[in-house]
Image (cartoon, rainbow, N blue to C red; front, side, top):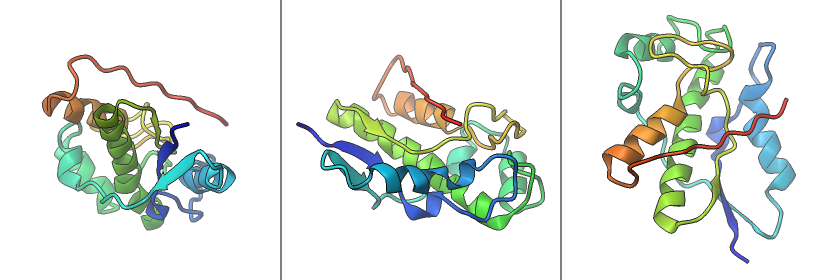
Length: 155
């Protein structure tokens, strides 16, 4: 049986979030629960994306202001530890997506906080849209002409 590659780097999770949503800490909790399964391979040696990647799908001023803590993120705060996870959660989803296509397999990115993000704003615990970023990069690099992304959300 093929192992499921889960793209997780410890930098994509924090416990320092003060918000109604505990989502900024969920990636670590998920990996702690499933990471020792014999059919799971944790891939953690991927780099963070750069803010320039986010410019592909978001307003530059929005990206710069959130990352410099001048503007609240989707969690309705400007906590540095929370904001620091965002380049990593987007990287996790991007690299999981690229590897799924390249290896013709299923992969997993234990991330959340994407689908409510707007072009120039954050909403409902979502700051930057990693779904759109990954779809754009997959399309632009010629990996896919049509893209469908499945998303599951649990509490």
